[in-house]
Image (cartoon, rainbow, N blue to C red; front, side):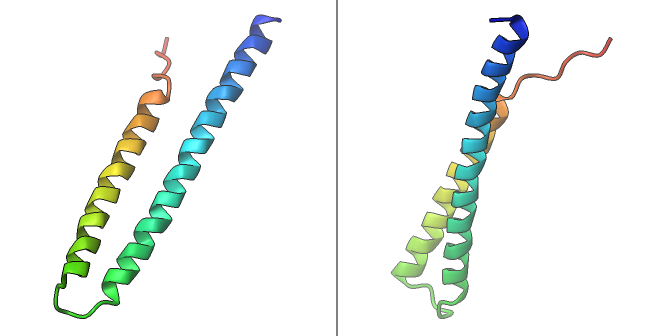
Length: 82
Protein backbone atom coordinates (compact mmCIF):
# COMPACT_ATOMS: atom_id res chain seq x y z
CA UNK A 1 0.00 0.00 0.00
CA UNK A 2 1.43 3.38 -0.95
CA UNK A 3 1.89 6.12 1.61
CA UNK A 4 -0.87 8.13 -0.06
CA UNK A 5 -3.29 5.18 -0.07
CA UNK A 6 -2.50 4.49 3.59
CA UNK A 7 -3.02 8.15 4.47
CA UNK A 8 -6.30 8.22 2.50
CA UNK A 9 -7.55 5.16 4.39
CA UNK A 10 -6.73 6.70 7.77
CA UNK A 11 -8.18 10.06 6.75
CA UNK A 12 -11.41 8.42 5.58
CA UNK A 13 -11.69 6.62 8.92
CA UNK A 14 -11.11 9.92 10.73
CA UNK A 15 -13.70 11.63 8.52
CA UNK A 16 -16.20 8.88 9.34
CA UNK A 17 -15.64 9.51 13.07
CA UNK A 18 -16.17 13.25 12.60
CA UNK A 19 -19.29 12.64 10.52
CA UNK A 20 -20.74 10.35 13.20
CA UNK A 21 -19.95 12.90 15.91
CA UNK A 22 -21.64 15.69 13.96
CA UNK A 23 -24.69 13.48 13.38
CA UNK A 24 -24.85 12.78 17.11
CA UNK A 25 -24.66 16.48 17.90
CA UNK A 26 -27.50 17.14 15.43
CA UNK A 27 -29.67 14.62 17.29
CA UNK A 28 -28.77 16.28 20.60
CA UNK A 29 -29.64 19.74 19.28
CA UNK A 30 -33.01 18.47 18.04
CA UNK A 31 -33.72 16.96 21.45
CA UNK A 32 -32.79 20.24 23.14
CA UNK A 33 -35.07 22.18 20.79
CA UNK A 34 -37.94 19.83 21.65
CA UNK A 35 -37.33 20.39 25.37
CA UNK A 36 -37.21 24.16 24.86
CA UNK A 37 -40.52 24.06 22.98
CA UNK A 38 -41.99 21.93 25.77
CA UNK A 39 -40.84 24.43 28.37
CA UNK A 40 -42.09 27.43 26.41
CA UNK A 41 -45.52 25.84 26.12
CA UNK A 42 -45.83 25.19 29.87
CA UNK A 43 -47.80 27.36 32.28
CA UNK A 44 -46.09 30.32 33.99
CA UNK A 45 -45.69 28.57 37.35
CA UNK A 46 -42.66 26.35 37.73
CA UNK A 47 -43.88 22.91 38.61
CA UNK A 48 -41.67 19.98 39.59
CA UNK A 49 -42.03 18.81 35.98
CA UNK A 50 -40.86 22.22 34.70
CA UNK A 51 -37.88 22.11 37.05
CA UNK A 52 -37.04 18.65 35.80
CA UNK A 53 -37.21 19.98 32.23
CA UNK A 54 -34.89 22.87 33.15
CA UNK A 55 -32.49 20.46 34.82
CA UNK A 56 -32.59 18.18 31.78
CA UNK A 57 -31.89 21.10 29.44
CA UNK A 58 -28.90 22.11 31.52
CA UNK A 59 -27.53 18.56 31.64
CA UNK A 60 -28.05 18.03 27.90
CA UNK A 61 -26.42 21.36 27.10
CA UNK A 62 -23.39 20.34 29.15
CA UNK A 63 -23.28 16.97 27.37
CA UNK A 64 -23.42 18.64 23.95
CA UNK A 65 -20.63 21.03 24.96
CA UNK A 66 -18.49 18.07 26.06
CA UNK A 67 -19.09 16.34 22.72
CA UNK A 68 -18.14 19.46 20.80
CA UNK A 69 -14.97 19.84 22.87
CA UNK A 70 -14.12 16.17 22.27
CA UNK A 71 -14.73 16.68 18.55
CA UNK A 72 -12.42 19.69 18.58
CA UNK A 73 -9.76 17.64 20.38
CA UNK A 74 -9.95 14.98 17.64
CA UNK A 75 -9.07 17.37 14.85
CA UNK A 76 -5.42 17.67 13.98
CA UNK A 77 -3.64 20.88 14.87
CA UNK A 78 -3.15 23.52 12.22
CA UNK A 79 -0.20 22.96 9.95
CA UNK A 80 2.52 25.54 10.71
CA UNK A 81 3.08 28.08 7.99
CA UNK A 82 6.47 28.29 6.39
